[in-house]
Image (tube, rainbow, N blue to C red; front, side):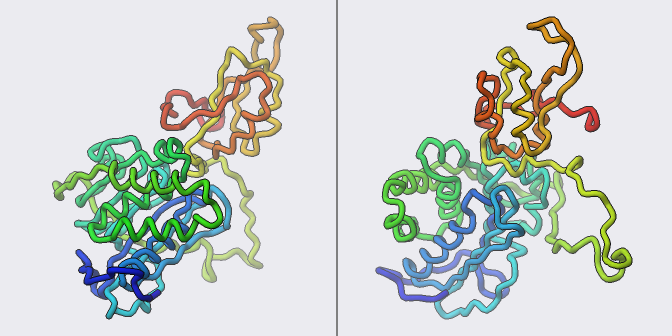
Length: 342
């Protein structure tokens, strides 16, 4: 993407470049948090607002909410043409939109020794470094989920502001103008919240730089290859393994909210179990404390399988299941595991 700056493009020097002359940004997210849109807005801002060259594209599997998404932005000087469209392996800035992705996917792979990683979390930069096992570089943290809720915006606007701050050269006003062009005509009521979220992301992100002290090893980037190929595929192409999610951790699919179980209000009607698509509720045979009769007792929720759809909270008529911000709870303390997973 190349274009003429709207106004005052001037000469902008990229603080870092790879061997091809590019400054690269990678966003690790899940569908529904807006990483793809954030990448497009960022590219348009540096092209039309700053007179640089840029390209933005995304990589994802099934196009639906809750599945992993990668968004990439390459930035170059006006004289440098961008003819590479492969995924960014060693980003100068890495933005992780969902904290739980660190546990289930190699999202920090390829981060260079002097790179910057931004994590959506309540943790401090020191805690985030240990959580992500970052060998060296700069770690930025911001509670993008809470800010998005408070400003009635989206996580992508907050993270976009933090990315602009981390870059050190992207013009915030140029990004604001791109946000206006993207949303003002269609969603005028959302504009104040979007701009406020962008500004708070820029102002409230906290950074700390760490030297390579040998505490953690760098994680090289490796392209994901299919497990089955022409050399090891079953005869006839039949995959005979029964599909299941017994070992899958769905926590990375949640977008900041979880169902919270209030045991005292539960009448054990079972409607939540009917509506739940992922077998999250843990039941056990026992004595009902309210009736004294034997029956199935709801013990709680196995959050490993919960993707945060919150259907159960709408189905429960007794207030025993209510929506709650995931960041307000320690999942390890309130989770109830299924017998087969204990």
